Image 1: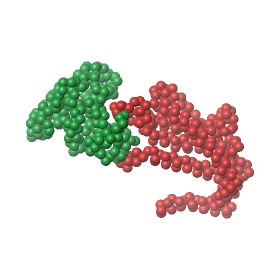
Image 2: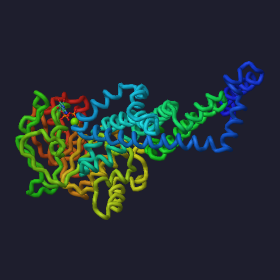
Image 3: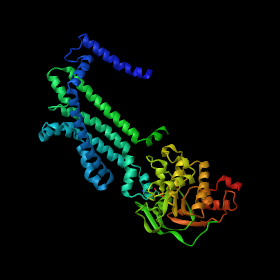
Image 4: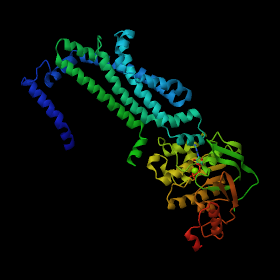
Length: 252
Length: 243
Ligand SMILES: Nc1ncnc2c1ncn2[C@@H]1O[C@H](COP(=O)(O)OP(=O)(O)OP(=O)(O)O)[C@@H](O)[C@H]1O
Ligand SMILES: [Mg+2]
């Protein structure tokens, strides 16, 4: 309990200082409104539904992008990790493509895809692709060959070995990839949503900026952060449930 | 004395294997009868594991004629249990019969771990893990058991227990076995025949005609031990003077 109190002390103090200085007029309200104003904006926008719809639109893009990028990464990562020919065909290209900063592709993507939904979803998919691909590939490659061999002596066929040895063995690495992908996905979404658009959290923020509603801009930022936090939490929970076998390992 | 039937179970002739330029096995001939336990000794790096892997079907690049029964199982020096499967699932791995669950329970009971089926491998001690590895081999009811220093990683006390377990299991299941070991005493205690691998060949095959149950003070044990140590070019240990 006292630990929790101590950990909360600093953020609460910062909030108090922020509120105090904003109210005292030290911070210009159009530069940084007080937390209370942000809360008020949250309440107002929740009641009129703006926040809800924006959130849903953003979430939809995130989920769609993660699904597309993640699936592609899983498939290609597995092919490259499991098959020698797949490795030769896929991996060098992906490793080279990884060097392109995908957020730097925005201008090109606008030329190709316009500024609509597909741009945003593509950016998220690109952001999610690389961490998942790399960690799937590495996870499969790092499997202890001796375990695969033992499975062979137990009479497991190639596909059974993949199912019982390789995939579960690559799971921890895959989870790491997923967490990195979520982080990269959110970041891509934030960037993508600031390129014009008619809906979503980014649109909400850009619109607010035009009307100098700084508190809404701050609110959007906080919601983005909250979403990142929640998705990470969910992933951790999934990891704990799926990787129970590691607990004994860590205690030992 | 082990009952030896005339039927051959393993037959290997002119087995050769080299890694890069180094020839490790240079024409090994080896035969194991049904139910016979053969110990394979040799200096470190002499190629014991290489030979065992060839017999296990894990080495596709060896040449020579090798005939081994399809019904075989392997126990390695490390337990090689899958960390993400519970003990019972590890034992059952690859067993496709309907009564797999009851057979798993029986195999675990035989190695004294009837109540650990639900444990994760990470929760077991080294000795227990190795027992599970033995149960995983036993459940396949192998005609041939291939063991590569199965007790090598265990402490002395555990090793004695495991040797006793091996003798018990062998009496019940009557499998044939190739037992790779560094431990000269263990080889004499457990086997019907001793093979010494050196310079790519089996240089000696010695029948062990000692009565069961054996102990290090069984008559004839010390003589055999000294002979083996000489073959392995190990200077006789100081405690030799006692026997
Ligand atoms: N995959 C491999 N690649 C290259 N060399 C190998 C390989 N496996 C074994 N060797 C070599 O073959 C020789 C025999 O190795 P092996 O593991 O069979 O010895 P061993 O008799 O089992 O030794 P130990 O008693 O230490 O286990 C060694 O010189 C080793 O370096
Ligand atoms: Mg070896």
